[in-house]
Image (cartoon, rainbow, N blue to C red; front, side):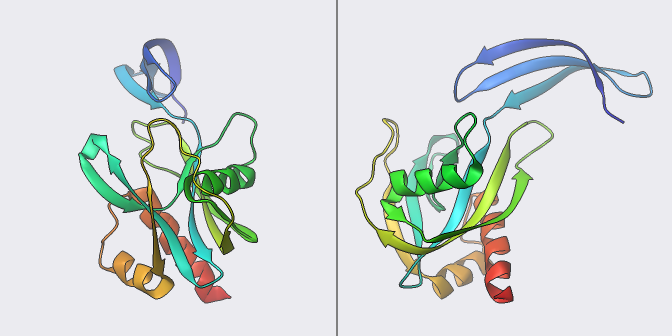
Length: 179
């Protein structure tokens, strides 16, 4: 059922935006040309809960949608880095919080019709503030702490624009209900 890639040409090769144009052949022989693919590194995000039962959220400007939105902390996984180590690193860098436990909730694809990247979803619990933020040059992140139940209500009212993060929250709340 896989398509055969007959040729592939990079349109852009950048750390944050790599795009290619593929010429493919479907199993029935039909040629698909062009098929555009955006390559993204694997990422991770977490519903991160402090030991005081508050959710650690981040507010930041997202240029592609020209809005400042409330999101879960997370980021790209470095090459050869385990996803659990990556989310622990990202949480510490973006928020200054360290967590006592991490539960892997799954791996999802954002838009597999165009994007090739996956995101690992986590529930992080037992968070303590141990450091200040260590942000990348292009990051401007405000930390927002909200009660767990308020975040659940916001999710149910469609108050989070970031689809991957909303998905992570749904899985995390399901996992919390199982406990």
